Length: 303
Image (cartoon, rainbow, N blue to C red):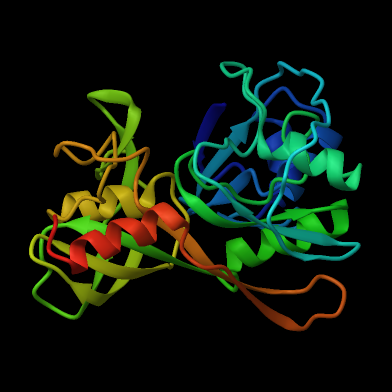
C-alpha cells in the first residue's frame, strides 16, 4: 500500500479536503471520495469526512491500496461465530489464520471462510479485502468484526476513528511486571532497520496508546489485560516489547526461545455500537486451549 503525505499551505487553506486533493493527486473525485469513505484519508492522524475544511499546517495522509486485484473464492471453514445478523458478523479467529488475502500468500484466509458462510460482504475495501473493518495478526487469536454491507462498514469504521469501538486483549508476557497497571504512550511506525517490523519511533510514527492491567503474576511471567486506545499495526506487541516485557512466543519482538506456535495474545472482548439498532453491544470469547494450557503449566511451577 502506497502512502502520500501533504502539509496544508496557504493555497489550499480553508478548502474542502475532497476539492483540495483534486489538485494534488491524479485521481478522479469519485476515487477520492471512495478513499475518504473507506477511512484511508486522515488529517493529523484522524479520519475525516469529505466536507472537512483544511487548516494551515494540517498533515494529510492518503493510503492508496494496491491496484492488483484477484478473485477471492469462498472456502468452507469451521467458523467460531460469536454474533451475526444482516449487518455484521463477529468471529473468534484461530491462530494461524490470515484475515484477508494478499499478493504474497496463497493460503485460505478468514475472508474466504466468511464469504462461503454468508455469500456477501461490504465492498468498501475492494475485491481483495471485502468486509474487513479491522485486522488482527495471523498468530493472534480472538474477535474480529466484519461488515456485510457498505453502510455498516462505514458506520463501524467511523467508530474506530472516533475511538468508540473498544477492544480488549489478554497477553502473557515475559518478565514479572511489578506495578498493577500502566499506560504506554509511544508513537509507532515502520522500523527503519527492518521494514517487516514496527517500532516505537518519532520518525513517521503515529500516536499509539495502550493501557494494561496485571491479572496474575508467575515466577518469570505476567498475565495482563490490554486495552487499545489506538489501533496501530502490532501495537500491543511493540509496546510491551518496548518496555521490556515482550509477549511470550512472539517471533518478531520477543528474543527469548519460543515454546508454541505464535504469540500468546488473544482479543477477548469487542464493544461497538450496532449500525442499525444503535445499541451498544459487547461480545466476548474465552482464551484458546493452548493459551490456557500454558497458564496451567505456569501455575504448577513447570515454567
